[in-house]
Image (cartoon, rainbow, N blue to C red):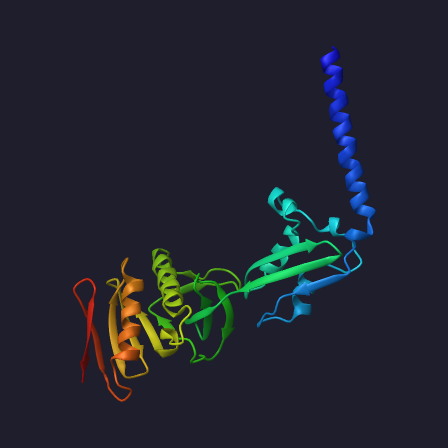
Length: 257
């Protein structure tokens, strides 16, 4: 009986301490938000991000902290992060309370990779197949991906196509393109005019309207695209036309017209 009473007393004591700390945090000026900092971004203004997050100056940070135990331990604002991540061009958001009343917002933006035609419009997608925007015209900075039949789309969500099994290869292609251009001054994406999915697991490509290539859709796709980029930029003259022919597992050659 005494052990039971001691346990109950301990529980009440801990609960009172937690409630006391919560009360101190709720009314302490240290937790009043005085400044909201947003890292530089290209697709949205800082005010856009702040407004979407729902965070307001003068409010107590406790109103926004949480989302999960990890968020609490890191003094992060999980719900506000989700609001910001609902923006089409935002891949992830990190919103953290820093003592002295400062909230720091850091955003990783999505990188556009290619266009996919849908009825009379074009859908701009990133390396995950997420639709970023819709246009009636192509922007030549990004290639068009052909041979797919989109069924429907929602801006900010992954595109849906007629043959769901092709989504895997579409995402693999987009991620491979992003990978081969990462941290490089030369861009394969910028050189590509279009990419066509064939029915026999091959990709047909046009570069700079003068170079054609056929690439197998398999586990070596990233390697082959890297090799194609190397050949295009470093082994083909600007005035030359022809075909990049892949043979064997890991070899390719340029065949001029």
